[in-house]
Length: 280
Image 1 (cartoon, rainbow, N blue to C red):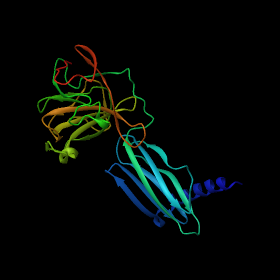
Image 2 (cartoon, helix red, strand yellow):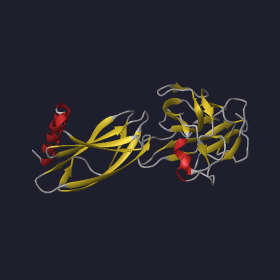
Image 3 (cartoon, rainbow, N blue to C red):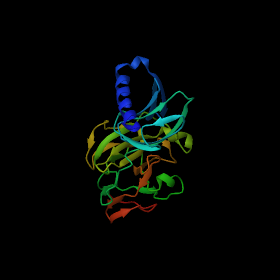
Image 4 (cartoon, rainbow, N blue to C red):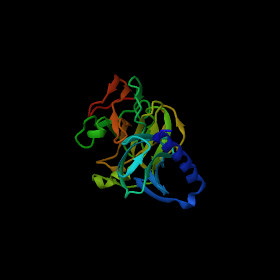
């Protein structure tokens, strides 16, 4: 029997033992932003790596390991996709009698790196029919719309303006407990938001929602045009507005923004111009 086959059989038996005898485990956990965790469990001459997704949306993980006198049961570096609230064994390292050590590094991003955006889809403007609001920052805006936020759109609107879903999908994350905001990056993590996972796997993000201004629940399916919350001025902002962007990841390491086609009174528009007032 080949060495590789023997190793695989051993690891199957070993990981069954992990489930049967949890008390003998030597476990260590490393978490990033309370979203993705890597847990290592050592028993005997095996270190097993588990990936944990603590959120209700999919995440992509890219992990690499440097090691000495150890052998992995998969090729590294490697990418993985974790489903909602999933914990899964992703690989194991074996070692012998020689002195051994390892270090690992991982990156992650929301979504599935295999996702392909439906470029034919036409989005609604994220507010009620018959309304219009000023575009205060469009694609490639100099304030914050560059890099991985290149295709985001800001709609200037009073606090408490009804926000409607630009596209149907599943509510996979939300925040509404913040009541602070301002023109400083120190406020960035204080933005209230709603995340909707679309049928093609992309994520629609609605930011700066007002305090307690979310009216949907995790796991709820939303149809295009449904009321989902109320605009605010929370987080990193220079004034009350709604920040809308569609995102995905193509490498499991970083998030990217995707250009969206909006239906307006002037027809289909991509990246509506700054200081215009598109009518829904």
